[in-house]
Amino acid sequence: MIHVVGARGTISDIDEFLQKLSQFATKEQISIQALNADAVYGAQHLISAAEHALRSFAQGTNATNTLPLEIMLYAAGERQIQKAIKKMGVKTGRQAIAFVIVDQKRKKDEKSEFMIKRLLTLFDMTSDESVLGGNPITLKNFGITQKELRTVPKEKYGDLILEKVAMVDVQK
Image (cartoon, rainbow, N blue to C red; front, top):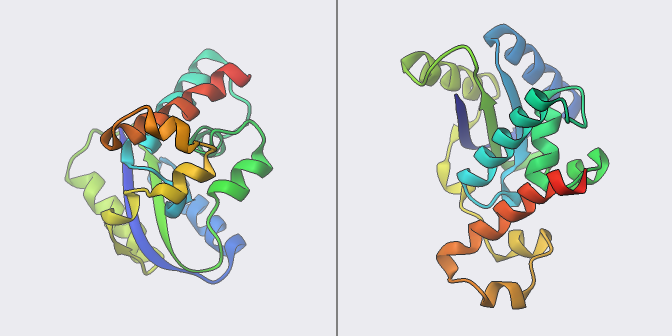
């Protein structure tokens, strides 16, 4: 099961945050990636990235050693970890965060909801799904031009991001 959670909160120390996130994932038996929600264009963007990452591990074509990093590469539409982190990584300070949780043990149920609440509580964050919406700056940061935007109706802009996610496979 793939969960996408939008949240708002403050990260004072990136290394400490990532360490706590890793410990939480291990305890819960999940894979989790935290991303800069300002670089996300809808929940489907991250679901697609997670699905591609899972498929790459299943087929043995993964470029990284961990599912969370593979999700980051696909979400960023990049093949280089440093470029992906620069584009999609969380920063220090108050921000909008998107969590991608891959839970291969449980189906979506109350236990998943409690796990998400524990995650947000751990980092003193508030749930805010509106941060996943995306905006024209996100599209520009993915290299989508005005010419490309004119080729599709506004409600299909997310499909242009999904193409960038899928192109990572071609770049391999």
